Length: 110
Length: 118
Image (tube, rainbow over all chains, first blue to last red; front, side, top):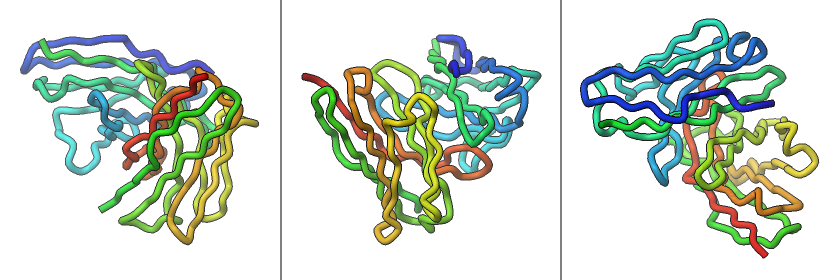
């Protein structure tokens, strides 16, 4: 089972909005509304940012939003800030109680 | 508050096995599945499998079947992940993560570096 496809890098200036895509198949992203997104700063553990495709855990800024269309999920960061510079990973439920991660996207704030 | 505290870094030779522990606190250990995720140096996250702390039931990613064993000790709220027949490709940081709301991982351990080298 191959990893979900994410762009290797995305960049934006402070205040701008960026979108990270996460493309899977009809067996994972396309079949369930169970995509989650994680932020990881260097040397740190991942942090949950979005679950069930578009829901934010308590304490996560509303500048982060998620959506899905077909086999592709997306994470949008609006009002980009320096602290948003990190790696971002999507994760999808793939059926049979298994999960699959994306390859990760490095977000750079210019 | 929820905490997952993992055991310290390990160094192993090729062909050996390693066991990593994950001690949970701040919540009912048997109320949530625990997953294991690894990250090779400079690489992405890779899901390995989960354990149901209540029943001890497990489900492993196909890639690791036959080589990974996940167990738990409910008396001390601790989960374990043992990986055998190690190769250099298994050098990675191994994380435990709690499965919270519907198929997402809401709390993570600090990670355990496992280095495999002759």
